Length: 193
Image 1: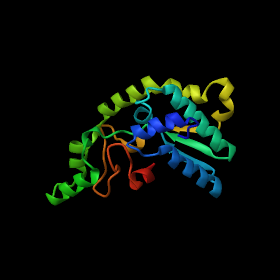
Image 2: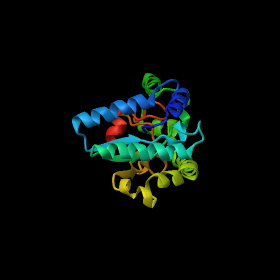
Image 3: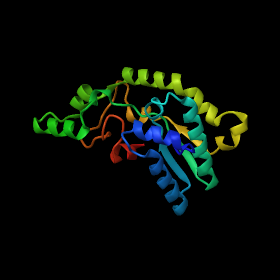
Image 4: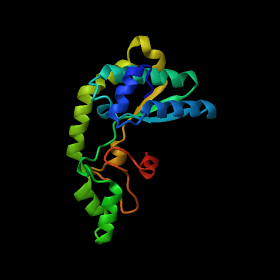
């Protein structure tokens, strides 16, 4: 999300290995204004980006600020809530998993699903943790009466049913990877949404 607070921006940069997420979001905002975009999807990694600051209040402020800024230029914001995080992939880039399986003739949807993918039970634990910590902040950023003017400018999107089946949230299919690492979708994964 965009943020008004430079000191938080610096802490967030340190928490994301120096990646200046705010500068990226500002560039997206500037491009959206230039192109007169009317709909924008942002991915919320609340449990990741804000956990180091332990600040749901900061999440709420940044979400509200982001929606207000985009509303000023006529953009409706779709907030894609936390995507399934592939915990089995700790330290293993997805491309290496695919290459290794292909090299030994084991690349199949079955192997990808059963050996390398998040189970639905693990995902439910993730959702429970995120909701327990952050749900009240999402609603406080958008839902109370003093901020109701922005409520019509934001839509929250749940993606589990798009990325998961009854048993697993797979890292990909034999055709293509859905994830580039344990937290980020590939272009193919994003296009499915």
